[in-house]
Amino acid sequence: MIKKVVLPKGRVDFTQFLSGMPARDYVFQNEPYDEQIKEAAGFIRDADAIIIGAGAGLSTAAGLNYGGKRFTDNFAEFIEKYGSEYMRDMYSSGFYPFPTEEAKWGYWSKHAYVNRIEPEAFPLYEALYKLVKDKPHFVLTTNVDHQFWKAGFADEDIFATQGDYGEIQCEKGCHDKVYDAIDIFKQMNQARKDCLIPSYMVPKCPVCGGSMAMHLRSDRYFVEEEHWHEAARHYAAFLKEHKNDNVVLLELGVGFNTPIIIRFPFEKMMREHENWVMVRMNLEEAVVPESLGKRAVGINEDIAKSIEDIAKSINDGKRVDE
Image 1 (spheres, one colour):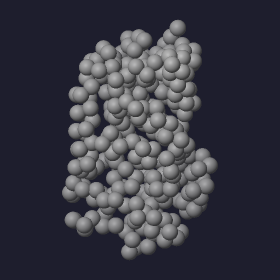
Image 2 (cartoon, rainbow, N blue to C red):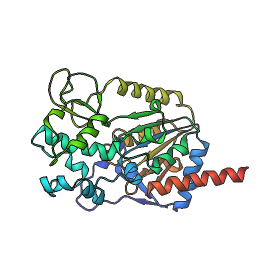
Image 3 (cartoon, one colour):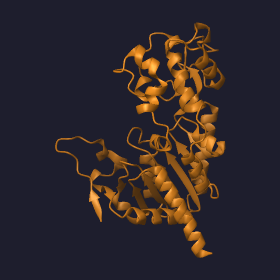
Image 4 (cartoon, rainbow, N blue to C red):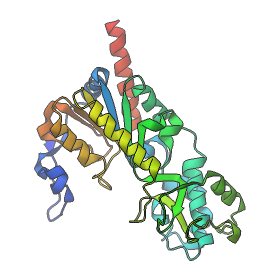
């Protein structure tokens, strides 16, 4: 049984443009959760290679929540200084028009510290690595929190398309280089007072002398430096190497914020490779093209629970075979 996506009357939904497919082809699957887990486990067990597509929902499921108590506990001084109407969560607060460089880096050094520097590898990321580590795999991600590296994934197997919270670049992208800022952010975090860092800590571009910015894709000045291009080449090579293999596209927490990076390309590749299958996990947006039939599983459940249950199903299957 499948259930069609029905939009409220009068609502305009951009999903009508999904991968060139009509929106009516997208459905929430109604198969029982246990059956979906068995199907996903079978896909992964029989795969020759796995491509992970990871969005913000994966880190949220892991515990890296940008709102709620985690935000108010860590950013109380910013909320008090700038107002709760502007400081609602860590994501939206990053767009605040900070009046000075001292204020800007006061916020971003804190943001980078609590989301990139301080956290160890989350159990969900470690469980994901354990799930795929024995097969050829590659990670395509829009996440910038460095969790894949921390969990044990190799650098050559990761393409982080949107940057990294631990790096900075020239604000105007005057040259194609990014700079490790981990130690700088640690120092800023210790020296910050009243939400501001000391003026002498404000980073300046070593080439043009202008302002620096986080290495995050937010405008046309985002720097795609050599390591970024190298990762892109590794991804292209992986796709080419396994184009005729049985490949699982394992999509985790990818919504409709930046669907053209992972979600839409995955659907396009599914149409181009009849022997590929897809597992889409998303607590609220696991719609899949009905035309893909049994080649796609859309699991609307907590990702941490689903990964745990898939791993258990695979292990149970191994014991039965043995």
